[in-house]
Image (tube, rainbow over all chains, first blue to last red; front, side, top):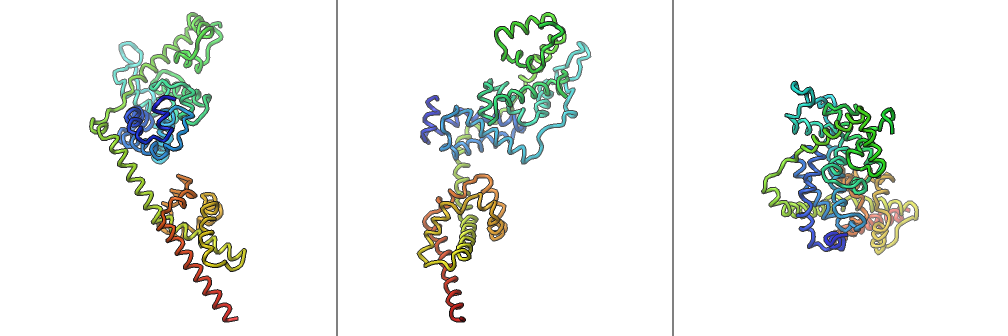
Length: 176
Length: 203
């Protein structure tokens, strides 16, 4: 456990601002990648730290501080999406977003950002969360399992499904 | 590994992801040299993951980050005050109703209740075991409680199901709030006492 985690777990409230400063950007990014809505993500990131503050007595230091914070963030985002009841864009609405390039015959990546953004929105929320932690945050399967409250096997399965689904949505074959 | 013995997609994803090492990685690389289908699959997966890397997170205004910690602190304070108001507006009437239910149960199972001094011990019992989320949600008492507090029922229910901390709530009542609860119980006991007295006179 690093010094920040040790101080946080010992109930040192003076460390909270430091925790916010260190992890706020990462938490905002994770929230956005799960919620796919900038305004909700901005709001949610702050609410995550409110919850972190309220639950600080329950951080026992058994996992890393950031995986504990990520777990709170993931749970809150997934709960928010359940409340919104708009989880994913139907596959049919986004698949084949990368149209074939008439010159090369391969996928046309000129509208790449929009296509990828649509593809991400087409993933089920939990797969979005796992993919974000694995691909963008480079977390290990074990860390993701801790942060998402599931097993390593489930994380791996979610990651595989996410990649296959992205492949399909982006017109590269894969699962349907 | 022969060309006819193709590698499963999940394992290829692991391979592209750098999760496969040592002899198995070397074996997959040899297979890819001779298997067009698996090689195409790996190239496709790499293109997909390269594309995924272009997924951008919108950057909030600088003011958002500048005020982030202050806004969190403000929300913490606001939620603490809101929680305190909930205790006063919702949970005290709710707890009083639960206390009434407990008293009724005591009266029906043990006969008339004892002197007024028993109130504090009843509250102690409430703290210890009676007022729990489980009791409220499973015993049917909750329906009475929620019915009594009317429009605030949803709020109480949300609080109970979200936090599961009702048993801690009693402990968080301040002296005045606990005194208010005791007064309600005292009034009830006196009312019960006068009913008993009238009943005896009629007999």
